[in-house]
Image (cartoon, rainbow over all chains, first blue to last red; front, side, top):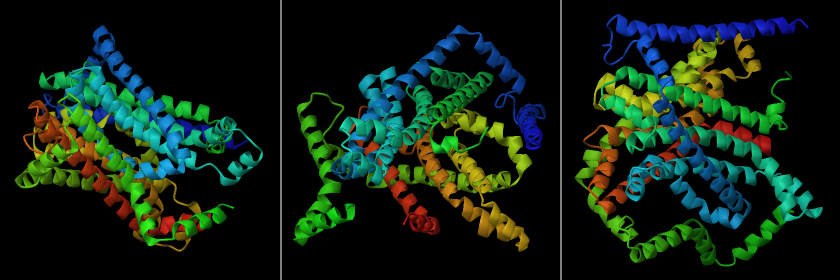
Length: 266
Length: 274
């Protein structure tokens, strides 16, 4: 009974401190150009950046670019996830395949996906497909590796039990493999969503297909510092949103799982 | 039951030493060889200029990277990568320990760090370019400022998760602050820290490549982009191959370091599992 008010007080204190921290950051940012530590040409005033940010928010062209970036992100993430789940399940379930593919996976996985940008440009030119190659390659491995771990994690006793009870292959997949793999899959999906966003924007910056990344590159070469910083803030907010949404989905999908259930009885 | 079948299989297989070596070689090398042969066949049949066969790429690799180019382009890139990663490790662990141990500081900075981490690291390249110009320092700063987040946040989490019984024991034995840090807090956080370093390495490699593609007249990333713009296809592929090798090398080196640093931890987990 007495725990409740202190807990609420603590949450309030935490929220207050968080707001103070953010405000402090903005104040320090405003002070640096004001005091002349860095030329406002290179580090513009916060007020200018925020003003530009709000200008962008009522600009239709901005939303179109945002939509373009998020479309690449969505397509890339979906393709990568579907491919990784299918291949990961097959490779994970068959020991022969797992042993045979090990070297190839361990060699291909650490290749930085941005290394593929030149090939993607040669193959598809300055188009969304080129960006998709990079996005899919990077996010595929995140999910694939997690699915393989997850499928391999099936409890031996549970598997033997299922077998001796005569469960069909499909029943085993849905009642045994899927529940075991789901926590791993959700982790992989959350990582892949963040990685896909990073590469969607990076691809636009380097390749030049339309979107937020290209806008960033354009405002840099135009020397428009306030616009550049405003766009960086936008990408940060976008990344934050993707993180929050996927964490939420993870908790919803895994609400039955010990890792979520056991956290706090609230 | 599983152990039983395992033994039967191994006795059947160990009949001759030769066949055992053959299978242990066939598994790791079989598929890569198959893929290379397949690539070679497709490359000779196809009319597309963009996919030269493996032998041409190997030849281009030798001509392009063995020799002065290695000293001029590859080593500086790797040096910047190493400096950036080292800076991010030192910064991330130092700041992460302080923030993790100080409750009010953690609550003060948490939303801010959450936001800063969410910024896609390559976006920092134009910003740092604006602040520092196109210099080597800029590239190192870009690498460090992107790679520091996973280490920082993992260190904070790891430090927070120190076993409270151990902390209290250390307190009641009046272990000094430094000793507590060195013998309790950092070891307890090290599995998380190493996980952060692993993520940081891949981010750093990406930033190394892009920062050079963007603003440079030397380096691996610059070379690859240059080859692509000039339609030197085989050379471009050889550059990609080299980047892949760097990635694999980093992963292997990290694996060795991790095993050494976390030997005690893996040991404990093994004992717990048995």
